[in-house]
Image (cartoon, rainbow, N blue to C red):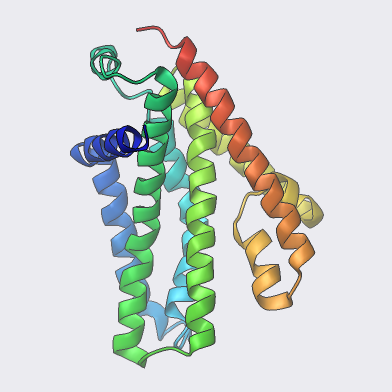
Length: 239
């Protein structure tokens, strides 16, 4: 069954690559990473380019992931889904396979900004300190985990809305609303989880493990809730 899931996820990822949206998001993320290298010196970022690039990505990552997640399953035609259901797997495995493919695509989007910033930082400033590199890798992992959560939630909203456009609009409005509330009341950020930096940076730079673990538990809970709600909507999807 694991082999079938891996095959299904790989096929779904190839399907995403055949579309134009993922290619555009990957290219845009890569361009941002390259441009960040050229403007790094003017901003006085020194040898922290990879770390700062990941923190910059936190500004645009929600829009990238919501755009990808809102169209992850809604964008397919009924005929394509019917063809996929002819495989010897249930709808739940088809759903998880698509979700894993979307998560992998989101990870590639994050890497497309991090890798050029990291390589450019080495070329311009030399190898960074081990502590800086470790923090950058930790934040990279945090960004991938956070981006996956946004994709899961955006996919669930779009499935229930029945439209990728409506799902995109609703997801953006919800995220901006929670970000505004979190800005006004910072203590609420751990409940809304609108930025990976809110839960990862307190541990990396302040040693505040309690705050990080607390917010991470909320993220896991949102992952579970988003996945279950999305699966329920996908099960109800008419073909």
